[in-house]
Image (cartoon, rainbow, N blue to C red; front, top):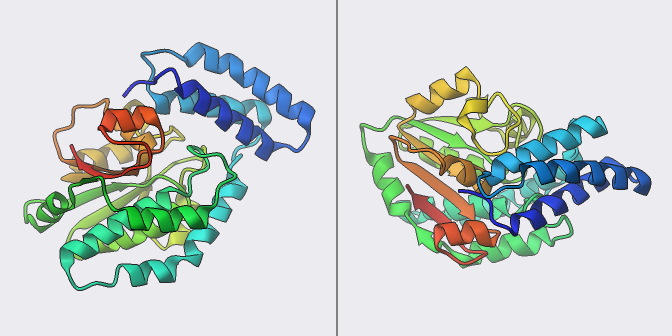
Length: 287
């Protein structure tokens, strides 16, 4: 999908929030924001993919600030919040019905997706949003399709593309459920820090095994930016699980020869409109 005019609001807010994480000195914040606005002006175009615009902007912000991981504190906070609710999450998913259990773990992974300081302002009540998401269910619900694919003996390799820190703690529960169908699951995180996206460090905290990286700090998945290792696993996968909006924004630009399940909360109008849902709706959609 391509950017919409209102995407400018989101990217500028991200730059402001990131600048405040980088430094407490207001003069330096003004400098970082002013310089980065010039890059936004260059990349802001109707033909631009939102995830790519974000990548260019945040790469530049990291470069001029000398800060390799502006969201480090927020990622640590997100992981702490998710771990705090892990026991409750496991109890929420403890049901006998296979379809219901799979659905609950999908919803839970979306609830983890609300711990996203890129799509939201960082001044949010995470606990309240987690509980609200768990109560909302799925607006687009292709859980049954996913279960049928997982029961298909011809499908062996699942590529699970993670999104954010914090969220990745709940991703492990869904990954474990997919593995229970006898599937080989490879989880994917970012090769370098960008925004609050999960890295190898976050995967380790979540206890996820069999993890690779994209080989890049690119937001979402832009195949031209990814490593050979990632591309090999991408091509080998029988189905793909894609978490979050950045992966949706970028992967919808490709015509893939395999099923892909987009699992996310539509946190902005451009993504919601592209999916045909309302802002705030939870989605598990097979493409």
